[in-house]
Structures are given as structure tokens and as C-alpha cells.
Amino acid sequence: MLEYTIHPCASPLSDAPPVRSPVGGSAGIEQALHRHEGLIHAVIRREGSGSLTYEEALQAGRIGLWRAILNYDPARGTAFSTYAWVAIRRHIHRAATQAVGDPRCQLLPCPPCRTPDLDERLEQALIHEVLFTLLSQLPHRLGLVIVARYGLDGHPPRALRQLGSQLGLSHERIRQLEQEALAWLRHPAHSLPLRQLLNQNTAADYRRALALNAALRRARRRPR
Image (cartoon, rainbow, N blue to C red):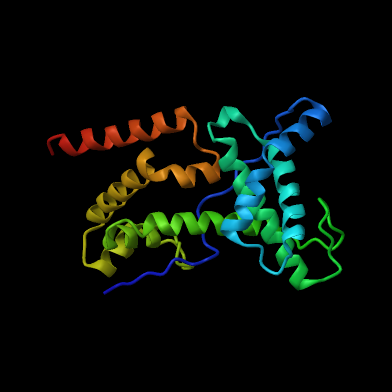
């Protein structure tokens, strides 16, 4: 039987660029920081702080919250608390990694010994975690097809015929299984956590997903 393991660094998805959203100058930012500071405490209690003391984690979380306030775009349809939670968790994890790797690092917005691309790595790790959880809810064969087709196990993506040969199925059947799996994954009832991380959580995004699924259902009913 062909088995699969999702590779921790593999993802066919990329981050959308941040969009700055002014909140009324420095006074507005200070008010927003004070209003949402409870989120930082919630993240620390739930996610932990690694090697950091509580105060160090709190400071790192404030940096994450500050950046979330500056970059949040309500037009994307993601709740601010969801957007900020990811930013806070990312900066606490980054600070903990830096503290272990090099004690000279300071918890500043732009630390002098900043690890290259650490933000991107942590964001990809979060996306991978959510994606893996989502794929684990698929029937085994559907999950296997998606992992192999998109190279999520660290191997090059497999073509329809190549994967069909491995599974003893026709390439057309593999295509059907892939479409079935994608339809399930893109459905709003299943894709919310991943869409929130990718900033693809607007009403237009959901309408597009539902339209694609409706088109797939119509195609299945069409006589051959």
C-alpha cells in the first residue's frame, strides 16, 4: 500500500503581502494596544512561551500585536482577533528561538541578530500545521492523492498517470479523486482556519469556492 507523510517544509501555498490599515496615529495605536492586550495573555496561557519568562513573552507579544494593528485589513474578512493571534504567537515563538540560539538577541521590532526569514518559516509552519490537520480529515485515499499531486511529502509532485500507476487506477480516476478532495477542502465549512492564515477569507473567496463546487457537481451529473 502506498503511504504518505506530509513534509514539514512543503506547501503549495504562499503568504499574501500585508496591507497597512491606519488606526488614527500613535494615540489610536496605543488605545488599540491597550484594548487588545488580553489577547497576548491568552496566547501565552494557551501556546506557552518556550524558554522566555512571562514578561519577555509579553513584550514579544506586544510587538506582534503592534504589527497586527498596523497591517490588519478588515476588507479581507478575517476577524482581527484571529489575525492578531497568529501575529502574537509568531513573535513569541521567534523571540524564544532567538533567545535559545543567541542570548545577545534583544526583543526589539528589528533585533540586530535577527534570524533570516524566521517570520516566513514560522508562518509556513503554522500553515503546514493547519493544512495537515485538514488533510487528516479526508479519507485516506483522497489525502494520499492530494499529498502526492502537490508534493506535500517532500517529493516532486506526481503526474496523474504516474500516481495512477502506483495506485493501480486510471489517470482519469485519479483526476476525479483529486477534484473530489479539492472540493471538500475548499468548502467554507472545512477551509476556515486555513483561509484565515492565508487572508483568503472574504465573502468573494467563499462565493468563488462554492461556485467551483457547484460546477463540479453539474459536471458529474452531465451524461457521458
